[in-house]
Length: 619
Image (cartoon, rainbow, N blue to C red; front, top):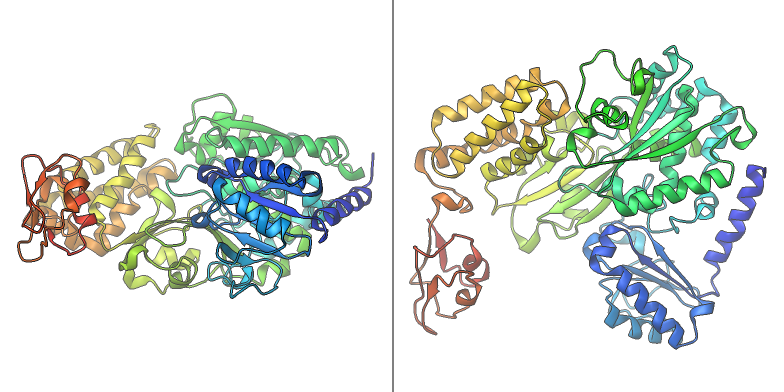
């Protein structure tokens, strides 16, 4: 068996070839977001054009993971023979011939489609990558390799420091590894924020010859795609962290529990596990040590509740995914009744970096109680959607306005939902709070796994609460009464309110149900499901009152209690609203007042969206 130094040397040579300035290179962002935007078609177009210009044999053409700028997909980085690297955005197959001809054949990068230069050189005012507004406030630890390496190439990962954390851990000893993780201050990034090192210590001290470690990759929050992107762009970082955790607690078997709805992530995990086995990073006596360890992949069926650790273990065991009572906790009696440690994707990717760099290095980021960095999936009404990684404690305003580019279409920021369907809605008045566990909890929200959905002034917060309750009510496993019945009653009352049947008494009843669910539900799903209701009631109760007492929706969103009409003074008769109406409810001649047939109108708001003169009123 080759030594780790030999493996590192081979990887160094391969990486040097990949980075060789004189060889043309094309990197295509082909994570799920890129593929949805057409990256595979772009890849085929590059293959055709490179062959056409007899460049195929001399050009490195590789699919990479997501750089995080999902709003700009398809992203393509091109390095010409002169070594200059330029990142292009919005690339489609029709644009590829021009890119190849200009950048690779003539050596003239196209500044008009360039998003950034990647090597610090100048290009007609195009910013360098690290100075882009979305990038400059980020600290990429978990995302350190995403969009940079070929995720299917083990040598790329090793050349950038990969598996040196595992090698260091094997030299340190189990107890020292746990102390290192504790000293880093890293907390579980799956939602609860429990100190990772302390969690490992509990499992380490539990008696038993058989122990397990699990990577929780069952990411099911609406608007969240952090775990998926990391697994697609840098699977070895996660698997290395899993192996380190296995060594630390004394486990010989690890599981990656990933939902089958992530086919590319599953493919990347399977390929990475095979590469680890082939190179002595899994199996017997890893890297010449006494540590023997293997990893298995378990595909989940997409149940949101399986993100809860006891339900996840039930699923791996072949049972229905439902939570079980604690104690005993998994560290004492988990998978198959054996001591088990469970961490999520982001936590394990951070662990591999911590063991490579040191606890002190990691603890240098963040705040006293919330160390390190956190990834977030920016979604909703924001200009720059995508995946980001920022130091803990960064102001929420910096995330939304500087990194995310502010709210779409110049509208006002109203709220942000953090923590997915189990999180809370943080209003504009708290936009300057630091983003860490403690401050989010103070305003009624949670960190969660890292979803961050931006809501603009046009949203109805009662409808937002109803949307998230629809999800959690559907995903409740039904095992415990507070969650099963609580979500049903909350959703029924929210529907009543948004459809004009609500009563003032229902508002008080909802508060009581939320309190009961938080105290009495069996698992985190039921305990946190009321958060969207609690926070919208806390900060936007006036909207609830308007729905209940006036039978009006201030935002003009709830279809059952609104009515669209056309303002005679504002309407110019431009006819833009007529083709926009899906049911032909609007009539009117050019330059004359238009009218809406209330019998036909379905209150979709299409007319209001296209009107440039604010002539469509909502009553």
